[in-house]
Image (cartoon, rainbow, N blue to C red; front, side, top):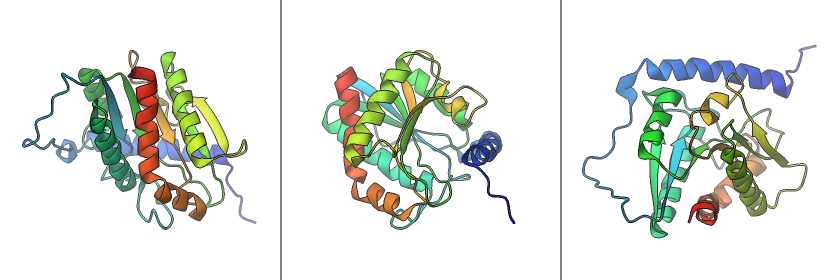
Length: 228
């Protein structure tokens, strides 16, 4: 009988794959996403600033979602990031999207640091075996990140009307654990990595699609509640 991998074993394999993919991204600087030179953005009058990091890259796109997501984490969350930026701008919140393409995790977060936002969130979605569902949010060692992660987690739990079983909670990650490299890059800016749903589950994919704009609003509203 074939041995089924446990969730922890799958997470270990995914962590190794992500380390490989991150190294591959750094080796291809030609993949870096160039900002549109025709767009001039000023944040001098913004009440606060929110940084969005899109998980994965065009070269390594992450998990694939079931219908109606019907695409990868990278493609799906680029769309979500644009909605967040649009909604944030309408509330006078400075919002900038950062990509890992060609620069890797460390390179993307270096750009975030230079921009000096009030908060940062990296967008992902989960996948396992087509059966597990739920919402979880990861954070690192910088203490204010725990409160930021909890605020984001609670906003999404409320949006999706999750029950205790599908509320997978907030999880601190150390470097060397899956997601740990991402959430430990910023030591002066509250940051988290969000996994709102398991995109490989049909019901979760429907939830993601039905509440795409609402998720963007929930993230912006949470930022406003914390940072103005």
